[in-house]
Each structure stands twice: as C-alpha cells, then as structure tokens.
Length: 418
Image 1 (cartoon, rainbow, N blue to C red):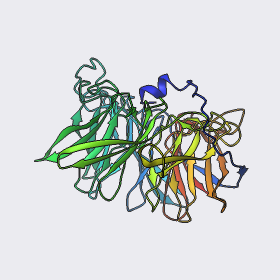
Image 2 (cartoon, rainbow, N blue to C red):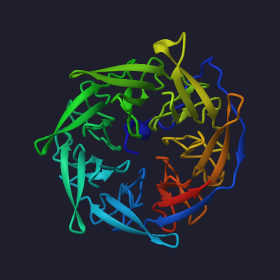
Image 3 (cartoon, rainbow, N blue to C red):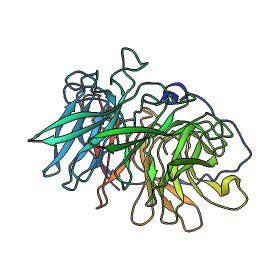
C-alpha cells in the first residue's frame, strides 16, 4: 500500500488497555456480488487500489497502481452498456516520470467533469532522486480523449512526499489531501492546493509531529463538512501511539488542529487507515486495522461527550474476530438511507483464503449494532483483498474494487446488492 505505515507496521500488535469494548453478534446474510471487470495487469491496468467515483451519467472512475502502457498505473472508466454489462476503458496511462507514477485511492470529479488524483511517485524529483516524490494531477476531457496536467510535484522536503490518496474539494474549489511522509517533522502533512490564475499553489496547513497530534495521514480521504471544517484520522501517533481523530479549522489564514480522540489500543480501537464519515448529528464513524476486543480491528464512533479529553468519546460498535466475520478493515464506511453502515475488510472471511468480506452493521434498537456478512471474497473469478470500501449508486447497490483475484489475478471491480 501507499503509506509507509501500511507497509511497515501491518504486523504490529496493539497494546492492551482496560477500556471495555462491545463485541456484538455476527451473522451471514445473502448479498449478491457480481464481478463487473477483471483486470489483466496489461494495458488495461492492474491492482486497482482505489475507491470508485461516479459521474451524473452513471460512469465509474478509478485508478490502478500498475499496468497501463508503461506499467506505472492508469486512470480508468467503466461505462454501463446495458443488460448488466460494463465497458472498461483507460483514460490515461502514467509514463512513470514527470507525469506521475503509481496512483492510489481513486479520483475526484469537479462540476465540469475533470478528474483529480495523486500518485505516490513520479514528478520532477526533489529529494526523491530516480523515482520522484509524487504528484497531484488533473485529467481534462477534450475531443474524446483526456489530457493530463500536473498541478503540483512534491519535493520530499517540508511539502511532504508520496501522497497516495484521494483529494477532496471545499466549496471554494480548493483541494486537500495528506502525505504519509515528509513535512517539517518527517511525519507527514495536510496540504491545500488553491487555483491561482490558471496555476495551483500548494500550502501546508498542518505538519504532523508524531506526538499528540498524530503521525501519517490515512489511506482514506479527508472529510470536509458544510462549514469547511476538516476531519480526519492519523494512522499512528497520539497520546497512546495508536492513532488519532482530529479536527482542522481555519481562522483567517491560520489553521488550527485539535485532537478529538487518541485511540488506546485493544480493547479500544487502534490504528485507523480509512477515512471518516459523519451522521446528521455530527458524530464521526470509521474503521481501525487493529484493536477491538479481539485485536482484529473495529468499527468505531467518536462523538461529543462529557468528562473526556477534548470533549469527545469513542465507542467500539463492532469488534472483528478475524474469522468468518472479517478482519483488519481499512475501508471508509458509507451509510444507507435507513442509517445502516456498510464497509469492507482486507482480511478474514473464507479461512482458506483470508481475502476479506463486505459487511453491514445494523442498529439493534438496544444501543448496540449487529454485523452481517454480505459477501465473502476469494472464490475465482471473484476478487480478493478490499482496501477502500464501497460507493453507493443511490438505488441500493454498492460498487468497489479488489486489488487481487479476478479472472486474471490482477483485481476486479464489483457490484454488491445487499
């Protein structure tokens, strides 16, 4: 994966603390999963470590880390062609150098249909000699083809490097994202890109210190509310070294980060990789790779509460067991209209594969949540290993990617109907 901690800390165990977490029942439910496209690893791309985004016409967009004309990754489109069939096309193949190399996380669309994303490598170099420190890019449709432009090349100095995640817009058209490395303290950054006379200007709005404010931005995108306040997680750091939930807000030209919650480790949640979502009351929800009652990851809720540091408290909604119910989630969650939560796990499920599951969490009316496994991945031509969660289509279906499996072993795009 793109972030340094995902490569280097994935086998790390969380500490044991006295906080009690709630382990609720897990059941198996009948969801219908359909692979829509299997990547070959060739010119069409491979390893789609990507969230999917949709335009108003129902086309899906994402990125592949490898494959394409130069084997340095692609931006792809899936177009519905009727009868449940989808047509895949490559919009852009990265050339490995100044234009970027190895995109992760997917792309964001603006109102004009342009696509924006990041690559973990490539660009004009900086201190990342020979590989590049990564870029923020834009794809613009023109006459049936797409033109790529680099909005910013990271240098690997105080501006950070290796961004490797989706960017998000505020209402003024500024872009925001995180880097897992670099910055003033070498622990990653939060950056802003602002349009300025046809060019884009980068500004670091927070340098992570590795202390109480955390370290290493998440795989998932930042969450920006209607007031322009940014919420996110750090994968490491914090008071207990197990990651944080933070809020970042601006006053005039100054940005101020507040740590809302520092994860404690098992049986509390620990080490969040995915992004955050919010309910109508401003409560925040996410997943952690470790922690929970069983150390196999958790779904958590962070909400304002009395008598806690920063005025926020954490509740573990579900603790994964690491078996048939799934384990080690890295996904960003989504709500349906009824208030149920949906997500994916990177592991667990079929014990012969350990390839992950898609799950639903449903409020049980007693203040708790019940987990249902909607689909277990890993049986060919099914996909395997899910990192970025799912995207709803608005009529009850969910779409996502797997980085492995499929007919050719290079990942899939799938549709899931609960």
